[in-house]
Image 1 (cartoon, rainbow, N blue to C red):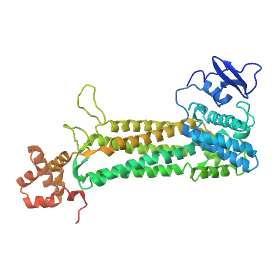
Image 2: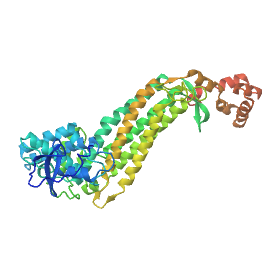
Image 3: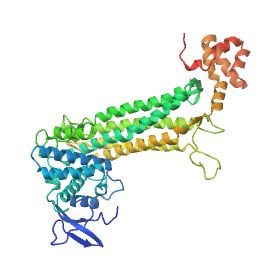
Image 4: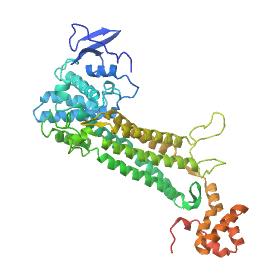
Length: 488
């Protein structure tokens, strides 16, 4: 951000709220709060408290995710509707607040909600950033001027019946639910479907299995790929379960959970409007004290995201192993050649999509560790590290959604099989002897496998040399039949 925008300038003596002045080659507007008047860039809709936060929390480059701001727009709209319906807010002012809040929710005012993640642990600055932007925009829509707090006041009108302590966790829950639903789940489902399509295509291709990275009994390529899709769908189910834990909202608890400053039933009414706006079954939490003082539902979401990251890591690593080569590795899979792989080795192509996913997984694990640590700082009636929890959870959602999309488009949908390598591995595998073991006994079968390996000959040749009849070997050792349970 422009350093000038984040500077704290005291309003000139004699100036009034809403006045526009020139300073440092820029136009500024006078905004006021309980500590006095400050200058805000005239083309921005935030107010004095936002300007103080910009100056006092110039830490890092991480900004509160816009998903939180958009959800906050929904919260402010819902609160205005409920306040108007209850006769606690003039209908004309409510209409202006609703219109301004809708602009926030739609992302039209993203340039005006700009605060750092590293702020007060309650999210008060972000709540006031939204209150000020909505109030100034609503005042303009109602025929007033920004900075005057007339006809719409950020605290008296936009924040009526609310506290940062209940609206911030409410907005974060709404944001997380919508991002999981609209950003991550479609990409996760698309990736699982693309993997399953490949599994169906290769359902009957027999390959050698591997356990401990060593040769094992056969399976089909389809079985291997279908397992990946099943793991992803199980993760999707766990994400859905965790998302349901976000539906109870803190709204109505105000400062410490008692609901002081809001009328009875305000929280449930606001939650009902949010449910209607989002098509999600949001409700007011049964215990507002618990909702304000803990981030446990977000911790559960983070754990589910970590689980998905772990599955993606497994799939990406499997792709790297199976695509290794092309001459000196397994190379059962021919991965898409998206870009040159080396600045010094001509012709080299690397499994870059898989490596990118591995790095995303590592980052998500780190974000989850931060969420776990921050979630433990839930002191007395307020969890005071919620902004970083919100940032890390939403960052993980964004990373995983993008990773699923990229892996699908740039890797999975372009993978092909190297049938010659697959068939060679099956035909030369010593672990086919497993099918012979029930016929001739474990010890004798083991001796045949060791003999074949030591002499560098085929398993069939070693078995025949050991006195196993050709018809016995051929009847028992059928790689395709070994990919299914025994019929006996």
